[in-house]
Amino acid sequence: MPSSLAAFKKDAHYVLERDLGRYEVLHPSDTPFVGLFKGERVYPRASVVRLMTEERWFRQARCLLPAQAPLKRVPKGGGGRGGGGRGRGGGPPWGAARGGKAPIAGGGRRSADGGGRGGGGGD
Image (cartoon, rainbow, N blue to C red; front, side, top):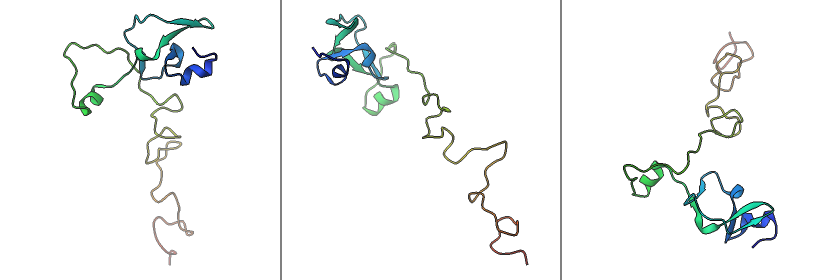
């Protein structure tokens, strides 16, 4: 058994419940723990199951049983930084309205004479 908390994350035989990923669960749920480490239960790594969505099962040419219940529900979201999970900003990939104004096509650059999308001066 590992001798530090960090060693449990990489260990091939044992896992702490707090080290389970977002899409991982102990199955069956009444799996007996094999020991204690600093007051936390230690489980066998063999009882960790990777969760998949119905779409993911379909991609693997499998289907769900009609009365099958999910083992765990994972909330949607990007982590709380503006939501959406679309890169750093969290907004739509084409740009968002700022201050109630829609972004201007062409990056917002205008000609020196104040005109719209013209190429030259206002002669």
